[in-house]
Length: 459
Ligand code: PFF
Image (cartoon, rainbow, N blue to C red):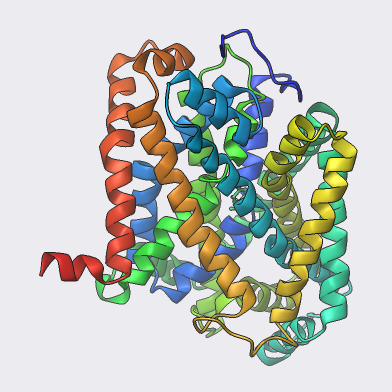
């Protein structure tokens, strides 16, 4: 089976660089620019950032390599890939469930991801129209609060974003995904560099750096550690099949490990640069680092509104955020679309429409959770908080854990070595060791400690 010359029925990237761009496009998204700064702010800064970086290195990178490898060997939707690879390994067909949980997670994430990406679209227009020129912190916050209080506006942008996503997905691997990322990613990197230069002159650059990089371990809790680990999976698009499906379009002759390192490095750099651009502005204006999901929407317009050229750079920034979200959202739904094409005999266009409508409908729950349903809570969380917590902090780490167990313990060494085709025996062994022991242990220990069980067990 899965011989080296096979390719996916859905298509193949035209070069190694396109795979790097596409996977980086998936990884770099709202997670880096919107979520990372606000969860770092809520969880005390430096110590949280350190835990996050450790998780990226010892859990994220090995799982990234494993997922690309599984995808390329299986060359199908994550569900069918897990089915044939478990057959190849003589293991239980239940391993397919890993593919199913991935498809479900992607669908759940896209439903709220699209609503937040919609905020970015709204801010492109507000910034461009000069709404924030000379505004006070209170006025900027009022614009944000008004947006969240308006279900119609949120629905409009959410709808637009789902359509944008589905148009790309419907056009397929080469005509859609590949074309989108080869334009979006270079644009995104250029905008980010411009923005960093801008933040360096904001006045409180050093204070921002100190907040991000001086660990204060008293500021982090068990739940903070869980959030840091969950975010390592979320930001790298791991644990749900997105990277697996992108791996299935990769050419057989390209090196997996080297490519994965590039993707992880690029994603981490973007998150840190986003933090370095945002916290100086927070401190220079006496804002609250723990402001929550509104952080970038309440800090950056203030700074842009007060600076020369702010209208232009501010508008560019929110365009960047929108692009970053767009190149990620397509990978969230690609696993589901490919499964419908493979198993339900659907055309890509119809499969995209079905997925789009379903995600749109579920997304309405998130839209309403910011206004009409703001008081509807389960475990003290709104609909949006619950989806975010369930996917990023539970489903993705569990998915990653099972990827590690499958590759570390179930797949034959021969299959792995064959697909990786590595000449670096030491690196291969180190990777295998991390997947076998360290990744599962880290995920389980972090789960246990966040529930307080670890303290009870060790007491
Ligand atoms: N990695 C994306 C981000 O950081 O915004 C979010 C994401 C995309 C998560 C694709 C999971 C995924 F499969």
